[in-house]
Length: 372
Image (tube, rainbow, N blue to C red; front, side, top):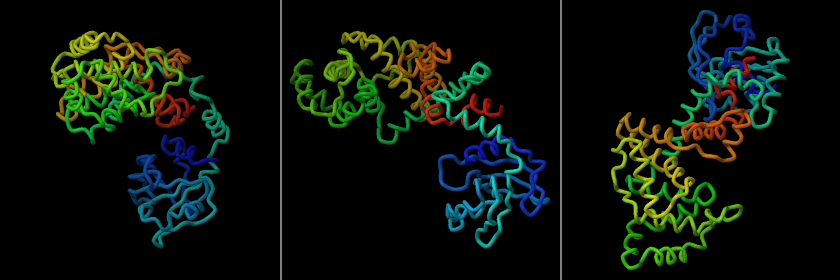
């Protein structure tokens, strides 16, 4: 037995609550399971609402395999557990107290279907996609909703990475552009360069150099950064990407209020900015649209409380070609092929935040499968 399974039963109301009583034979009416506390310390479920012997209780619920785990985990000396109103355990082996109060306890062992538990365990042992064999049954209705939530979550995560430390639109655009040119392989050395060389400093250096001399001068100063080259194609080697980055940022107007344009014109404007400096790589251009423009416009929409800007950020993703990488190929194993960058970004977020962590209890498809 494990706590994850017990959490699953409690959260999804998969227990015969009409039969459950406390160890001392008190009736329990299950009103609300509470909010699942998955990331913070403290009780497993907060703001639960239960009726015990006609008395309504609102507080926390703690779940353990054995009731003695309460003491093993030192909850009895932790003030965060003082408002626990119910202890839910697989097996009751010890009465528990906090602040001289005996906590009502229910034992689930007599009500557990071991066949269901074994299916649950086998589900989590499956590689990549535990839901693989039941995926098609739920994907048509649930996957579009999951992609929508995942894209929003991904944009918010990207925003959180830079919003607290960047104080201007041009600075955000500059740093995220550096990230984008570096891609996942060389994002860190590109960020190191952007932090050490401001746009203003680069513009000042350009006054006394042509672009080729400036690029070579700057590369001479940063070539000892921790650049990675293993497995890269010739077009993606660090110097080539660095050269393209310098050409782009010294020619593009990073103070231009591009967010005021319709989404289609924003895309066209920056495509032309890349073409002007002879950058035609779809990987670089689409990466810029996906990882720079969309998050920045979405962030501006949040800052200014403007729904139109958030919609515009989504439209950019929907009008940009999907990425093609190992993550999209993994989804193709399930017959899912992204139609645009909106789809591929959503699928990437779902895979990274849910699938790789086997966090099926927070996945709409996983929750449906686990109810079987």
